Every structure is written in structure tokens, then in C-alpha cells.
Length: 169
Image (tube, rainbow, N blue to C red; front, side, top):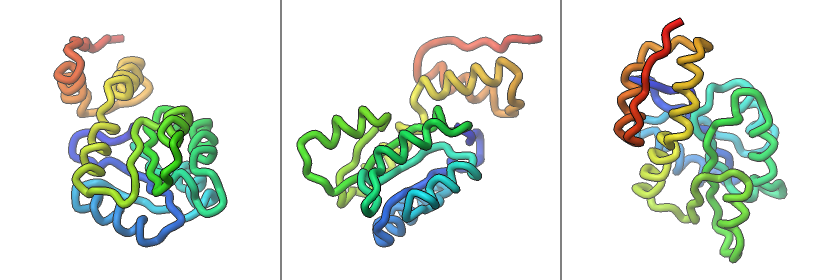
């Protein structure tokens, strides 16, 4: 998770269908997010290596490649371990939701998607308490300097009811 305060969250959308990529990017861009698109595994891996990602949204199948396997592979990359995953698919398979959760997906959205539901799930994925707590721990450990840390603490407290304190060196 990289974004705080007024910086837009950076989202990587992975799908082999250009129409889906364009539609999702348009909806999320209008909602204030910074979107990057990849149509294949190679482009997705390159984006994950170079962008400060806050969320990855991937189709379950990217052409002939497995989006589930791709996201599990990307989760091993430095800086991507804590990035939440969200899967999308037009698959009607009975176990697709279970498989997406086993692959680390926080949410699953069936195509065609409702733009309002997409925006709601993205907002939820970006503010999951364990991700905020992970970022707070990094701030407290002094590995990053984030001017918006007090606001982050108050947001975390509002969501979880747990009071955060700044540890001074």
C-alpha cells in the first residue's frame, strides 16, 4: 500500500479483453484512482516491478494463462506482498470464488460488473485493517517517512477501534 492523503491509489488492472480493461479503468479513474492496464502476464509483472501498487485487479484467466497463478507469483515480488488482490471473471464455475480466495483474493467480482459495486469493493480492499496496520508498523519502525501518518492513525482507529500511538526513537 503506497497511497495516503491526497495521492490517488495506484491500481493495476489485468485482463486480456481490451474492452474490460478500458471500462474498468474509466470507472476507477472517474472515481479518483490512478489506473494502469496489462493485457498479459509479462506486462503485469513489469508493472508490478515498476509501480507503487495499492491494488491488483486481475481476471481469473488472462488468455491462456491463469490469473490466479500470476497473482500468486507477483505476491512473491518485493513490495507486492501486502498489495490486496481482487479477481474478476465471467466464469460460472462452482468453485471459482473459493479458488480466487485460495489464491489470495480479497474480493471476487463477476463480469459484467456493476460500476458502483466495483468502486465499493475497491474502496474496501484499499482500507482493509490489516493492510493499514502493516503500513503503520512500517511508519513506526522508521522505514518510511509519511507526512500523513497522524491521519492514517485516526483512520485506522475509526475502522478498528484500536488506538495507535507513535513510538519515538
